[in-house]
Length: 145
Image 1: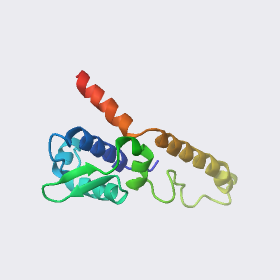
Image 2: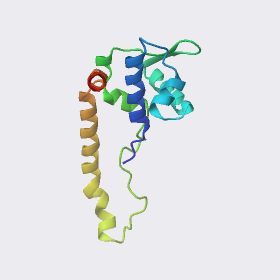
Image 3: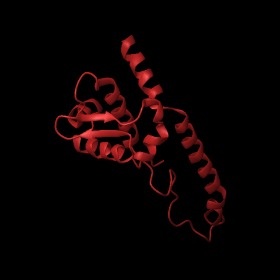
Image 4: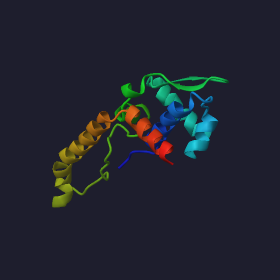
């Protein structure tokens, strides 16, 4: 599978923005400390989320803010925003299966549709979960600690 950690980093960032924005400026440095990810990478992910209309940012004293309501952001929106999967999809085949081998010659015929179905199922599941659910569950766990 080829999903990068940018997806879970983005979910972490967005959750922090909601949890902390009423208390403080949520900066890339703060987010870096929470995620354990370099602030440069955080800024790159924020830029992708901003381009997708999920966050708004203001340099200097502004920090990051959600640009849409939590219930209007799905995990699929985040997945799409941060380009965590390239144009070839989740699964990548080895480049040169041997056409002289009966398995090598037919493996794509056997696997391509199945792998496409798996990716579609994953994406459909991501569409079912909103950031509101993630934030709510996170806040419930924090309150129970």
